[in-house]
Image (tube, rainbow, N blue to C red; front, side, top):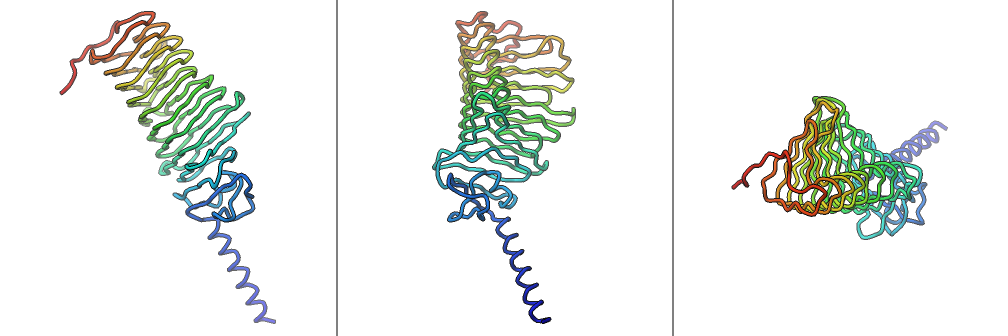
Length: 312
């Protein structure tokens, strides 16, 4: 009897250990016809990202077997979600596509995803806490607020590349921090922000560098550097298209704000904006290398800008 009990205890222990091992797989899979009760292996995939993430180890990766809609997800650890080779979608009608509330040491990567708010979703990506967020080759669209919202409680690096954020009633990308000691440092490379409220809204505590990007056909400003609080906000943008926006192409500063807002522009095409090509408002500074093309706007040139000769 004792021997039988020992065997039973060992069996239960090994079963639990196997379940734990499955839950900590370094690579998991989702499939349109999968089941979240599965172990999320390649041959027994889960159905949703939410189902797969609980079975994926920190710093692991979730991949898609085929095209499909894999549901909204909340991320609390280092993880990569990659829909490469498929049409991997997140339909976020009435909700937020991806919520990230990870540790200040965690790195999250979203790659090859289509995140659709269906005109009722709140936000595409809501970033509350992490060390780094990489958004690569994604499309985020049709949200009633922001495509990507960063409201950080720790220092953060935000890297967005080869990505389109469009047709959001709020800002395409909006970033700020909650303390004077914190910074959001963002890089945009080959990013298209169009049809949003503002394209890029760099708020208190955020600093962005953008290159080879498009900030066009937004309802308000293509780029809005807007430090509401005493913490500085900054944007540097090179070799980009800033066109057809309903207000200004580039705006630095905002009447009534006490923070400093600084923008640096070089080698950009800034045209056909309803307001100013470049507007310097209260608290704002714009440094131009005098090699931008600023034409066909409501107001051309760069009034109140600080000119700097091109560097070596």
